[in-house]
Every structure is written in C-alpha cells, then in structure tokens.
Length: 251
Image (cartoon, rainbow, N blue to C red; front, top):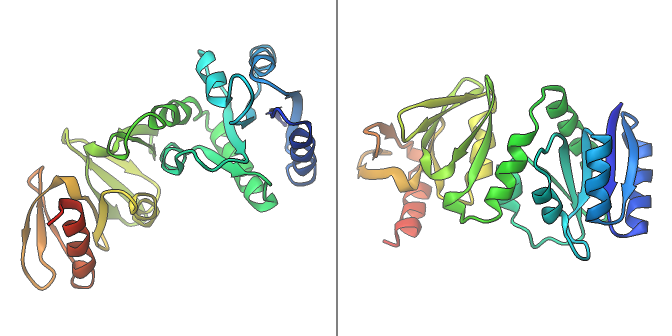
C-alpha cells in the first residue's frame, strides 16, 4: 500500500478525490486529509507519505509555498487544481503529474501508475526540484528531467545540441561534449519539445535551432551544429524545417 495524503482547501474536493481513489486506485492508503498548507506540512513531517495529492490554489499559502517550506521532499506529488494558468511546460519537462478539476478517472489512474513506478525505483526528489525551478524561468532556461540508464538526469534545454535516435533509445548530445542515453524514444521528445525551439529534421535527429551554425543546400540538405556535427535533413522534413528556422531567426 502506498501511504497517501490529500491536500485541498475545499471539503468537497477532498471527498470527491478520496472517493475516486477508493474506486480506481486500491493500492493507495489515504493516511491524512488536510485543508491548508500549515496542517499539510505537519502531516507530511509526521507521517512521511509516499504520495501527496496537492491542490495548487489555496487561501494563504498555496501549494508551491508548502513545497518551499519542506527541506526534504521524499514523496511523489500529483498536483490537482481547478486553474489552468500555470505553465504546462514546467509540468511536462519536470515529469510531474498535473490533473485539472473535475478529475478524470482515466487520467487519475495513469497518474497514480506513473507515480507508483517512480516510488518503486526511488526516483523522487529531482523532478519536484526541477518543476519549482522551471516555474521561474523562460522556456530556453528550463530544465528537462530525463530518465537515464543510471536513474535520471536534469538537463538545461539550452545545453542540448541535438537528440539522436538509437533503436528505441534517445541519445542527448550536450554542449559540454557528454551524452545522456534515455530509454524513451525520440518521438516522445519530439512531442515534448516541438512547441519550443527544437525541430525534427530527420527520423534520427531532433535538433536545437539555437545550435545551428549553417545550413547546406541539397535534396534535403544538412545542418552544421555548434559542436561541429553535420546532421542530415530529410527531403520530406525540409520545408517544415526551413519554415521553423525562418520563424526562429526572424529571417
């Protein structure tokens, strides 16, 4: 059983969430229900939960204030809120789950499954620290929490030169010359980063537009990156790539 605490300033919200968990997530054991940040901090320190469902918008101290009060975040968090004004990129890049009210049962189940997986692998605190950092920074300065063969690694987006597909794995090539290998496919990162300054130029390559030094014409052409690597641009991706480059560099 996964020890779980619910935090929401609305009694109806607590009751509804608890009922959904009872019906859909029997692996969770709700050990406390808190109506404000102060009581939640006390419960977390005393009961040491493995998972916390945290409402963001609460009177007085909000969910982020609560997290900033805790020196050691030893638990997984699933944010639950009626508001959608927070940066979705901050959530997505940090591998933190985020549910909008009214909570969808299917999305709730998926979120719990992902949290349980991270709890079982002891991979907890890095994604929360990354999330809090991302809330305060521009997209180019945000960090990406990448699951690696050793556990996870946090990478600043601007330090990614390009991503390379290797079978079902993805290799991140960084500005310092090092690589990070993750078990997620390059399609996953294309979908995650496509709204930012990255572009899929080939079935094997996802490049950071900020690290392009030169484009060489050809059937598809190729790009020279800041680390000296020449990467092929496929013929079918050429038009979309050039269009994105024009928008990025304001050509």
